[in-house]
Image 1 (spheres, one colour):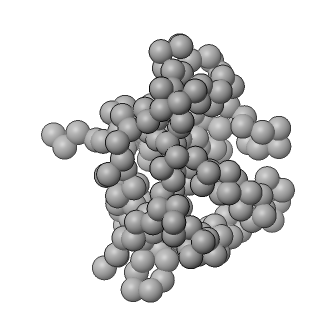
Image 2 (tube, one colour):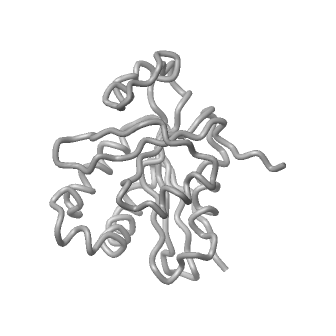
Length: 184
């Protein structure tokens, strides 16, 4: 049985090694060939992401073994720059960030032995369950069409593409609004 642990910014120091070790395992093949994917670069991204308001992570454990995790944070007021590099450009009303409107899902990963068991969805929904934001934003590498299709099955819509930094992949930008799925 999977047990889910919710951790806020106050617990990041305690769980950082767990996040890095899991990332290194899940992304080992990409790390070997892509400098952007190196663990050190991921740790830099994690540091930046964790400085955003409302940062949190949900970690799934099978007994004491990490099955996977997801983390994200809220876009602060004035955070419209996040939308400026999306192609095609999004309308101003979509890009408007008054603070607390958009939750960014930065990472979601499940270790190989626990895939295709609904754990990714459980971690994802567990992370979003107590969020006050009205929508969730994520990026996904379009070279992983099955992952993109999975997000679409969870209610996300692809609205464009963006390349956050020059050496990163060009990611598909996806939004789910409302943040919580309908239970009908």
